[in-house]
Every structure is written in structure tokens, then in C-alpha cells.
Image 1 (spheres, one colour):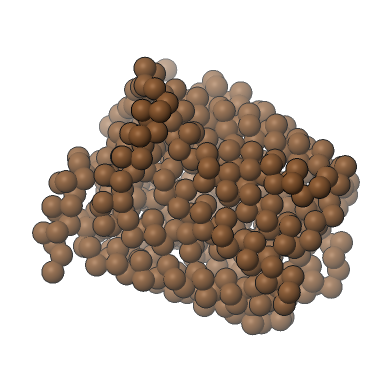
Image 2: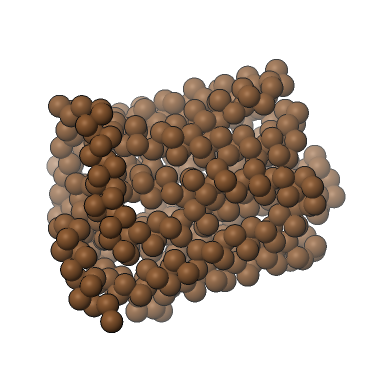
Length: 432
């Protein structure tokens, strides 16, 4: 069958839905699961930090896999690794394993996700370009956000109530099963288009190339650099905010065993994600520059996070959580489109992986700190600190806008600038 832009988008949506469904089955109960296994708040969020540390550690090696063996091979390895490590999580929970074992398996979970980061998104953009697509990337990523939100809604509610009806380990077992199904689906429908894997490359040489390309096509381009510098403050804090909601909201609700409530909260965020996906193009239309939309959304997000920590009413906190989720969901596709427009095709997976690495680095640092704040003071105090940390992203977003990159104002592009030198020339020419 001849690939078309429509068929490529359908495959991407299927892969996105399947992965999100698998992941979201445990999103509503993950922190409760870790605490039930005998870990305290510091250890639970330190385990999450080892997960993000694994993402930092393995981003470059898995980027090599995507370049040497292809995006499809990277996706398949990701589903397989996540299925196995998810099963190991259940075993650790069952035996109440010591913290160091949770740390090791959490890092391996991070390995599984790094096979996806960069590679799947790069597969989409390259395949769309190869099949002649010339529409807006914002819309494609926005529709994927809607589909992902629907999958998250299903998985979060299902996982929460499945845990309440059975036990906390069953959603993890089901997650491993869904990942196994996604392995088969990807093996059948996913093909590398618009990209030829460099199968003759050598790993050490590829590591040097990836580092060099990350610097040349990413760090040395001011617009890309400042976006990446903002990522640790947004991404790192975002992981803590999401997972700390589970015990915090049960605390506000007054019943620590109401796992279904925790699942419903994750489902509300899923609904916000879908709504945000629908709003992406409308929000984009309100601003001349993509960065202006990102700055406005981040400022409102900081305010929402601070209020989540300062307000003690369960229902008001729910509304604030919905607002935070809506803002994140609506602007994530805008950021994705901007980053993809700023980087060349050949280095796309590399730069996207490096961008993901920057976000993960923030999670490594912030999660144990915020978990300790929750242990010593309270969950509300940890949210106030989270809001302060996330505010540090704003100056970097303002610096990104100040570059006045042509891609910041573009609304229909799948082709990035041809080389960093040309990009920098264009940027310098429009900078006052």
C-alpha cells in the first residue's frame, strides 16, 4: 500500500493512543502504589527521579539506535523494554523490595521511554515530508493531543477503579499486556519513510556526531537553546505536580483508600488534554508568535500551581488542576511545531532527544527535593515551591521570542531551515 499523509497521520494517532493508554493505566495510582510498597515520600519521588535519571542517561544511546537502526526499531525496543520493566515493578511491589531495587528498575523504565522520545515524533515529521504533506504541524500534534487525552481518560479511570476492585498491582499487569499488543501493531504498520538509517555507523563515532549535532543544530541556534533551557523548569516540575496529586487529593478528600477518586483526577487531566488539543489552533490564532502563546500559558500555569498549594478546598483545587492541564495540553503542540520548524530533518531525532534530555534533567533534580519538602512540611508547601521553580522558565521563553526567528511566526511548515549557519544568519538579521 502506498503511504499518504493521511495514512501516516492515522498510524501516528494509533501509536500515540496505544502508548498513552498503556502508560495512563497507572498514572492515577503510581505514587500510591509506591507508598503501598513501603516507600516514604522521599523514596517514592526519588524512585521517580531515578526514572528521569534513566531517561537522561540513555537518551544518547537510544538516539544512536534510532539513527543506526531506524525509528521503527527504536519504537519496538521501547515497547518491549517497558513491558518487561512494568512486570518487574509488580514483582518489587509484591515482595516489598528495598529502595535500591526500585531505583534500578525505575532507571530501566526510563530506558524504555527514551526509545520513544524523539524517534516517534521524528518518524512522523519525516514521513509526512516524504509523502508531500504541506499543512500545519500544529494541527497534527493538536489532533494527536486530543486522541491521547481520550486514551488517558480511559486508562486513568480504568486503572483507578481496577485497582480499587482488585489490587494496586493489576493495572500494571494490564499495562504490560497493552504494550505487548502495541509491539505487534508497530511491527506491522510502521515503516521508516523520508529517513535512511545509517546502519554502517559506529557507536562511538555516532555518540560524537550526536553531541556535535546537538551543539551545532541545537545549542548554537539561540531560539532552540532558550527553549531547551526553559524545559527543565517546566518538565521537571510537571512530573512531580502530576504524581503528587494522587496522595494530596486523597488527603483533601479524606479517604486514603479511595483509589477511584485518584483515577478520576487523572481522568480530569485527560479531559483537559483533549480539550486543550481542540483549542490549540484557536490559541495559536490569538497570537502572532508561537512564543507569545507559550509565555502567556506558562504565566497562567505558574499562578495555577501556586494556588493549588494555597487553596485547601478539594473542588477548587480540582478546577485549578483542570486549568493547569488545559494550558499544558493546548500549548504543547505549539512548542512541538516550533522546535520541529527550527531544526533540520537529518538531525531531528537527535535534537528532539536532547530536548527531552533537558526536561528529564529537571525532573532528576526537582522530584527528590519536592518529595522531601512534602515529607518535612506538607504537600501544599511542595506545590508552592513547584510554582516558584516553574516560574524560572519564563525568562528563557522571553529570550526565545526576542530572537524573532521566522519560524516563530510561521503557521504552515514541515521543512526546517537547511543548516544552523543559515538559521543563525536569519536570526541575527531580524534581531534589533
